[in-house]
Length: 217
Image (cartoon, one colour):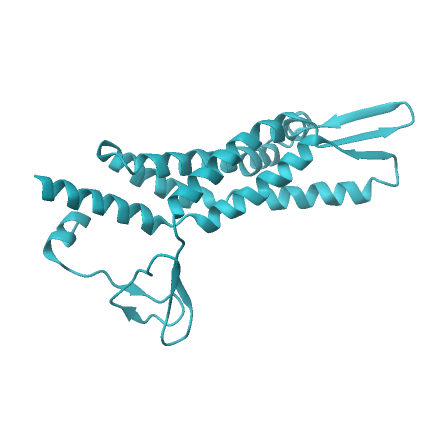
């Protein structure tokens, strides 16, 4: 039975607790609150206020920060008369040129493609759910977001940068570039975006729009 058929038949959705499998009739938390399992106290659903507005703003911020984070130098290393600047794409290019094709592809996907795709998908979802013609693309974008969410590993990449900074600081002069600060800010924004986005808000907005359209008709 589809979403529209369930809505018309008046059948209530049930949410199963992921810890104790308790079925709850009211599976959604009120705005600004969280739904807690009465049996095991596990948090089942968070419903931040104005979730889509905050998510749209954070996603746009992440897209703006992605440009300098990917193009500006992250670290500058110099020893005697030799020096080099490393950017986000230089590391991938170096791995590829050394023959580490799978590793370079994985680093490119996890540190560039997945985070950028998450920001683009969330921007599209937040703005597209207000238009009836985009219901199917928005639903597909939410599914793709859930697939990409676990692959965006900016924090792991940042940890690698910090390890290199500590290990190589005794060998030469290491300087943090502007790209590193933008990358760190993008990592924080990406985590905040994950926390602020609530897929239930998307479905609730689409359902409310359908009810208004049916009432007018």
